[in-house]
Image (cartoon, rainbow, N blue to C red):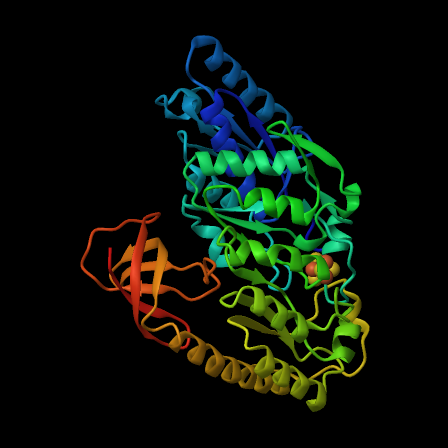
Amino acid sequence: MKHMQRKVGFVSLGCPKALVDSEQIITQLRAEGYAIGASYDDADLVVINTCGFIESAIDESLEAIGDALGQNGKVIVTGCLGAKGDIVKTTYPNVLAVTGPHALQEVMEAVHAHLPPAHDPYTSLIPPQGIKLTPQHYAYLKISEGCNHRCSFCIIPALRGDLVSRPVNEVLQEAQNLVTAGVKELLVISQDTSAYGVDTKYKTAFWNGRPVKTRFQELVSMLSEFDAWIRLHYVYPYPHVDDVIPLMAQGKLLPYLDIPFQHASPAILKAMKRPASSENVLERLTRWRDICPDIAIRSTFIVGFPGETEREFEELLDFLEAAQLDRVGCFKYSPVEGARANALPDPVDDDTKQERLDLFMQVQENISRNKLLQKVGRQLTVLVDEVNEHGILARSRYDAPEVDGMVIIEDDIEAKSGDWLRVRVIDSTEHDLYAEVIE
Ligand code: SF4
């Protein structure tokens, strides 16, 4: 197979603080599509989070590094021992990289350098530019692996198998650890977030002494009690998703849903074998907006799928006009090696694909421009992502990192990534808002 899933062996030694670092690194690795293993020999690379507190901990860490080098060969060392001068490099000159504790970014850079992630625009859960810099104030929380669907353009189920949900107590503990470590926004991801728990038959687990079912609604409801922004990605519009919209209306969950519709024509959706393709999406959107009027819907689409004639493309544009989605990405269809869609008749030629993409984006830009214009004058709470020569780049609850627009603040005030600000929107474009600080 062309790109097998990369596997990282992970060894975590040391105290609870080191464990939080490990959780963050594992969360990020999972989010980027790496599998995590507990043994040295079947992994492509090993990360060891070390402890250097007392002599015996140093010995244990050095021994683990030696074992990993012997059995695997590719080893990245992080944690407290890494902060203790050259001891690791002197003992084992062939380790790939050594960092100190709390070095998520550096560890990820070393992993990318020695085991580059595979990126597929249809199915990767986070964008390629998101891989380079994940600031510490938000984190991806991956709740399951694999997928039970068989979309014809996708090879994820062939690569990663059927849906395997992580136990709900494990997911909640990871979320808790991240929030305790200062993460302010959790981005819940998986290939099919609304299907969470189906494979476990909604098994009950215990967390903080309370029984919790391994199920979408329960997980989301528990997460909504955390002191953090909770943003849901890759949700399909099944009826049970209705249950979480009231939590958005109550302000407990970000009023945001990322639903990869991919198309709107019933014929194309059928050829794509998309989940929830027979649901009446427009009706459902109306109902959600009745309950939570400011819900932001993000989606992605594919134009130029085999069999898409002018008629199906028009259906897609009509849907776009009717649905008035807030954030939209679009790709031209391109075959992925091993996908069944490659055998479908009536491929669309490249020029037509490009024309459709341009037209699609033009229609959506008008929608987006109008929607953002309606926000001018409103007050928003924003989370700062970055401060650079353009000003303070922040996001409101309607914007996911990397893929959506920004709230740009040009005021000359002190701010740093991870800060909360209260702002008033003063201007808008087709993608971004401009705002001034009011508190
Ligand atoms: S839902 Fe479809 S596109 Fe998404 S991972 Fe599953 S098979 Fe692939």
